[in-house]
Image (cartoon, rainbow, N blue to C red):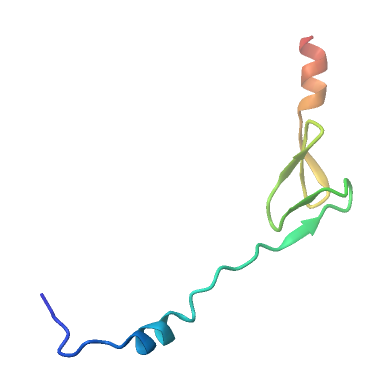
Length: 67
């Protein structure tokens, strides 16, 4: 195994680690429902799955037919 020849100082180590940052996820607002969601992700709202303002899956209709 490789071993370092010299001890790396705390300052040098910390300078290398400055680039690792936690990023805040971007939040979008659906134009149809006004619901906040992550960009490029489908989201559920009142039994319907929305993506880009359009309904993909409508579970509210299926639940009415079953009951």
